[in-house]
Length: 219
Length: 219
DNA sequence: GGATGTGAATGTCTTCACAGCT
DNA sequence: AGCTGTGAAGACATTCACATCC
Image (cartoon, rainbow over all chains, first blue to last red; front, side):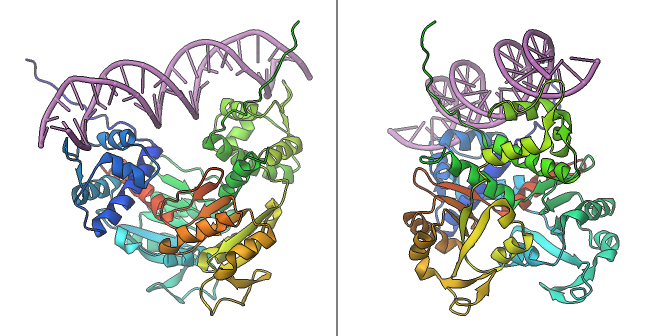
């Protein structure tokens, strides 16, 4: 037999798979809290909107975590998914724009639990600068680069007006940020190696509008 | 030639297509404001993150709106897309949970412009009930069914704690709502004919975490 | 027996490439 | 010539079904 070689081609993982992993994790954590020890792909699928086969295929991308005939260990699988999603490390996050979106994030809560630490908050408004905000103080956005570097920020949340968002993002990236959560209703162009996720509430409402327009009595 | 019959099978339209239509509309509106009269699929594609062929395929699902050799009329195409998305009518929206998420929505603004009127706001907190909120008064959530019926609400925005969300939604649906924008981190089960969109910020951050973990220096 | 893990089949979405108008 | 509209090809994602192991 010949010696083999592996070139780990780390196959591309689709957004859908990642999205569902998050869902599975949420289900697992609620079952974990209920003291459930074991779960089947069938049961996992019920929680989110997936099928049993899909659960198994999704997980098989990353390895085989179950026992045939038995199912998956709840705590073990939860750990595995957390590890896959990169939730075992701390992510250092900066929020730019200390308006209501930022407050809503805080209210939503559960950030620290998942390893996302908001280590800096910025605003342009002199009235807001210097005020306390979730354990730290609001900084002037002019200090953005410096603070991102000093605090080792990897992810920036952009909750600024659409006119400002691109320049703020560019500055954040130059200072070292590699992940962007964008709330402004515009498409951002980013260099290689930077990841953007958009949250656009108007587009969600438009999707509802579309679906309702063609519904039973719509058309 | 024989007489023909059509059975309009209104083919299923994928979420991706609807999502991109929203993007195209956004691009078109900015070009419209700039006084641009005509646009090519190539140019439209540039604005969002699509290809020219994709733009054409997306539009072809609904008809053919361009002129060969020329391109698309900016105002006409914008109108067509607005019509496809159902944005020419008024949508009556209720917000349940007068917390910071709701305020963030207001701040985000531009609701009325797109035909979404927030006609009722609810909360459980007696301190909030009765207070002014964006032009109306916060109502007690116990009045939910009555108000949804009276106001002809079609869409509810659920910004309530995860424990409460399912029962609130069920009540809203029984009272006649058919679209749901859910901010609670849980998967909702809805009857036939009701449409749900989930907004889950933690899952967006998890997607960033995943992508960054396998990036250039990650793995 | 029971549930996983996975090739194969099916279904859906995207890209290609070119005929057909302007 | 230029750009749309669209079948056909290709890439990708989901579902099926069954061998495999506990």
